[in-house]
Image 1 (cartoon, one colour):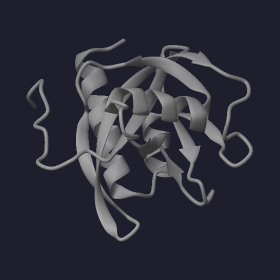
Image 2 (image 1 turned 90 degrees about the horizontal axis):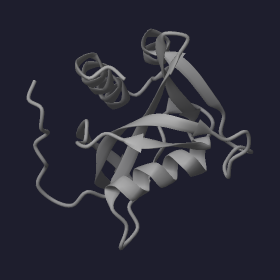
Image 3 (image 1 turned 90 degrees about the vertical axis):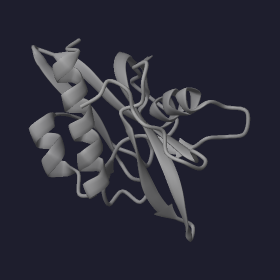
Image 4 (image 1 turned 30 degrees about the vertical axis):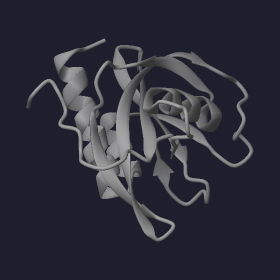
Length: 145
């Protein structure tokens, strides 16, 4: 696997953060429930005009999960998400969590859950999110925090 990710052609519409922390010697990932509450996902949102994908990934992690942290220098990868009758390209960033808020903007309709990679794989039901988690595990294996 190369150290740089090949950028896709076309616009990047959304940004996602895969938040992680080291807790008692184990790497854990933070999952949240989707806005419908039916699935476990990672924080993700539309990139607003004038914002960067990095700003969006950090903002979504804070709004949706109450997390603050530091992003990796390079994206983990990209995937296509079909929504609103169109395909949106999502850039995925790895985020080392430095602060966890007790209360956050979307806490009334999103649940936050920390899980090691094996448990996170069982909770995630969307194949592209499994792939994104695998990117994170590989990156952390090379550059352990």
